[in-house]
Image: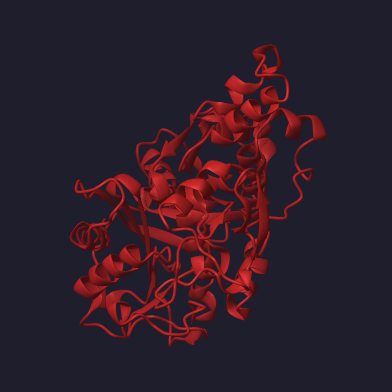
Length: 417
């Protein structure tokens, strides 16, 4: 995308709905990030026992009846909450919206594990007799479930689907919404990511078997991206959905605009199942910058992906150094240090946490950095205390995932002509 993009192809963010382990709307969430408030707690999970996790505490009955919550999924409830909050935040008169012109594009890391694990556990109480298997299992476990539950809740008859992109999924859902708006397939996109990961014991067991599950006596200090003494990932649940509109449509109804998406990119490492590749990550960032028509010197805040795994943090820092090394004014922060890794929701939540910087000019900190790893010793990293900047005009949001999938967004402060 270049600065002379026609107005009808310019896509803007008009609403944000979220639930995170440290906040259930953007205002509360942003306040927690600026105050250094973590949302990580001790958490008991089947078979694995006590672990550390980011746990959300939103009102799932605000937009659903108890029967709907029981019939559906946790990811569905998270997504419904976030979608309805985003629509409300955007000031959209929902009754007047043509529902066939609305699309739902929801990034997920995985879906269905929770429900299958639960059903296997249930029938284990009855000698594995499958007549006790729930007839709700199939609609609960299809990959499009969270997006479909949003469509059912809001009466949306336009396209809905999930985008499976590992931990790059929050950005991927966002990019899909942007593209569908530009293709004129829809007039309103509800997009972002959601995750129910903490409700599957398998994810904890798998990270533990890899030696990649975080441990700490104080849960709030467990997620330690870039820190020399980090010891792994804190698994979290959460969701963040945005409403995206074409600029003329948003302006015609007098919408508040959080920012304009001016660049995006996705690529693939093609080198390993799990280990990241700094060169491919750097290429992805450069492609997003090129599409935005800006250079690395123009970026004010980089929202990093860093998960608090040694190799992951180091490779991303190599990529950041390759792209931004000559521009020490760029501020790099990390939201996972507050809430853990929300998997499919991570990229969306991390972008949302930085969007208010367009107004207040503050780069929130990366907390829990007691000893910066020398291999992550970039001058850019905002360590432990927020950084007041002269102004914030451009934010770059990194989100990477297993199987070598990388995604980057560039969002610009919107100023009306």
